[in-house]
Length: 284
Image 1 (cartoon, helix red, strand yellow):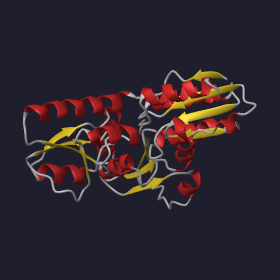
Image 2 (cartoon, helix red, strand yellow):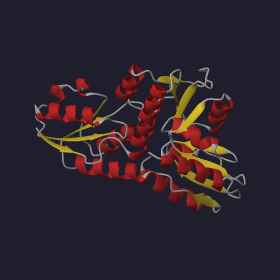
Image 3 (cartoon, one colour):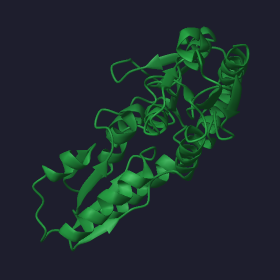
Image 4 (spheres, one colour):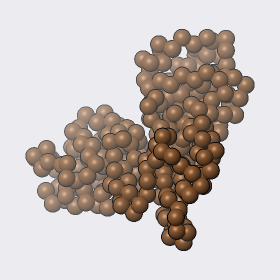
């Protein structure tokens, strides 16, 4: 089996920075007995990485978890809502902000653009933690939509100012199509460029590889939005596409009579999982 592996597969800058901060916090806890290291929600969306940190004593806290001055709490890479961060600080916890710089930039851009009450139109997954965080920075009303159909159903008043933004991991081509449509409908529209360049590069590479192979494998957590979209992008090429969290989920029968496989991975996927998948494919 010939394999084309994406050069962009694996940890992005935001994930790497978040895990570096978590590692530093663990080292700090070793120097100060009694400190509990927590993350407010999963720090990234990869089950193997989360399990490894849990084994080292890291607690994945929820909004209901009692937190206090003996806790060092990391804000996850996807960010949290303004309200959740305020509650965390009010509880007296030692806060370490591990929000991806690209997500933080999007949060602040939304806050500035909607400070006068403009309505936010956010392209993304309504139940994703990053999206909930972004919406919390809106100064006025906010609408989240995940498809052109959902956008069409929004009753928007063209006489009012609107701000269009996106979840950082959304598909850029789809966003540009939506932007062009809204520019025709809303004369007072401001468009924010909030899609991460790394996401664009990964999606473009996935498209290119998918056009050169007869089967595609995408490795990454099922809770990872950017990984799911990589699988969607690859599948649009019309070839069988397998989204797996680990190599154990692959079945050799699905690769019979396949000569060339493409391999990519989400931004939260460790190199070890990608390597294991490449080795498995090479052994066929």
